[in-house]
Each structure stands twice: as C-alpha cells, then as structure tokens.
Image (cartoon, rainbow, N blue to C red; front, side, top):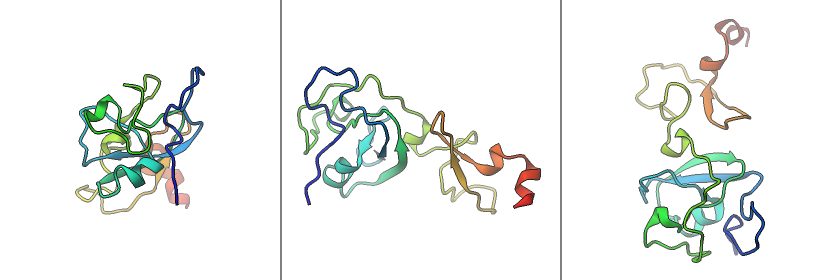
Length: 143
C-alpha cells in the first residue's frame, strides 16, 4: 500500500496549499520537538512508525510538520523538500498530550477522580474537554 503525505506542500502558489480542510493528526513524543508539531496519518505510518505517538483525532487547516525545521536534520521520508515552517498552523495543548481546562492527559492514570468521563471536542477551538467540566451537574445526572 502506498501513502503520500497529502498535506505536504507540493508546489503551487495557492495561499493554503497543503492545509487540509480536516484530517487526522498525531504528535510524536519520540522525536521530542521543542515546539508542538503536527504529523499527518501517512507520516505517522512511514516516518514515525515505531515512535510513541499522541493521537489528536481530527483538526482543521493544518499542514504536516514532519521533516520541517522543527525536526532538525530529520527529513520526511515521503516529501523530503518542505517549507521550513507552517506559519498558518495553530497548535494547542493537545499536541503535548494535555486536554481540558484541567490541563491533564487522557486517559488520566494519575487523576484523583475514579469516575471515567467522556471527552468532547469543541467545534470552535478543537480542544478536548471532560463532559463534567462543560456540562452542569444537573445535566449529567439526567443521563
């Protein structure tokens, strides 16, 4: 099976070249970039196959960072020639494996709360929140 990095710039002068309307993204813990970096599905399978990855689910208007300046000398195996930075990418705490207003990981293995809670993705900021953080207590008891 052949995968290409669909979000890698492949020429053209369109302002949003490579910025996908929506795509599944990952962040690589193994590469340990100083700044957050978006990894597309194809690059997660080819360039980061045996790495520890954080699944970010889907995000809008993000271009894959694999192999750009954030990764130093490590090139993308699918598209070695990339822009140095993706200036239009917007990153949030999810790229560090943190979520919600509590800024905790999910699943939170060290959390104080033993009650499992669902995570809900905001359609505006695309961060993830515990339902208990955004739903009033009375609404949660109705379920």
